[in-house]
Length: 386
Image 1 (cartoon, one colour):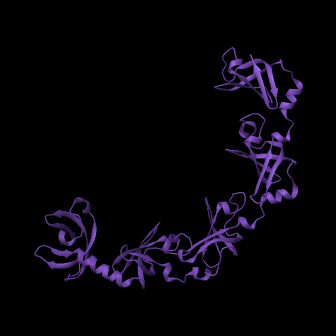
Image 2 (cartoon, rainbow, N blue to C red):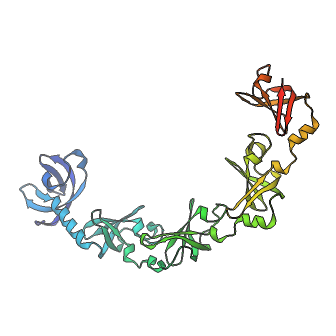
Image 3 (cartoon, one colour):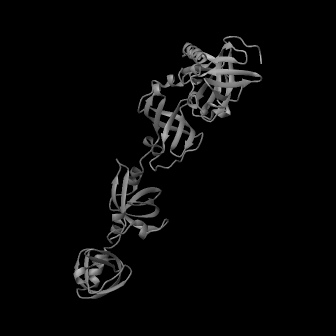
């Protein structure tokens, strides 16, 4: 170890606690850090901690050091460096940024402060690299590299919401994509704004046109949409079909309220209430993915990009057919579908019938076969009695 002088900065590891302070060594030299000059808690948690301190005085068996004096000197030095461009050395490359050394002072460059573009900094830096930095947070020793570079956001201050611009897809994520508008500025394109189907159909490097939704150069924020520049699927559908038309479609997806059906490459909605004449019957109980069927167009709303179709309206009313084929008093047979407080419903094939409690003699369970007589037929209401 080189010869020490008063005021020199030394670094050592705290090895143990003694009365009044902490001890550590560098080679054969023992360092004593008084608690009053340490700025540390006097407990076992500090053992093993590397500290820097200034040489205060020399004793017979040890060197007395002052950590508070070192910290104050660092604070003053950092305050004098605020907003100035200085050189630093990269000492460690981490996932969340770079650890740097500025003339003996350790600092950190968060990944958000390295490039204006969202790229992996670990591919561009390694230990020992010299970089230009600017101190932006003295208290936390946070530095920035990108603030030493020309700010591409200055070039987009004239952009306004609604402007259309060319962009290149630079990143694709599960929640959307980032697009480079040509000068290093990236805009965020949410998956819901990529197209009207909500499906990410973009590829890296693809050139697209987008529209500015939000721009704030001061906060480096740019949001764009591509969907607004594409023709709405409902408008394409309306060019070929009208409300009341019968169309053929393929069931592609089930959702809580029904199913999506593809008609000529356009996804339209089949609500559960339009699936069947049977009360409460849902799309996933009637269809399987890939099934083809005929549907009637119920709604075409181009403004809200909504097309609604109906399966039950595309077929003859089974209750009208049942009424033509049966009379009051006829005996029919069906399976108990579900049971309520006031009775039970029986599946008669294409229609359902209600058996009230007062018209039952025996007890039934779901799935049991029920035989009874027709006592009422009124539209989609059929009643049976045992």
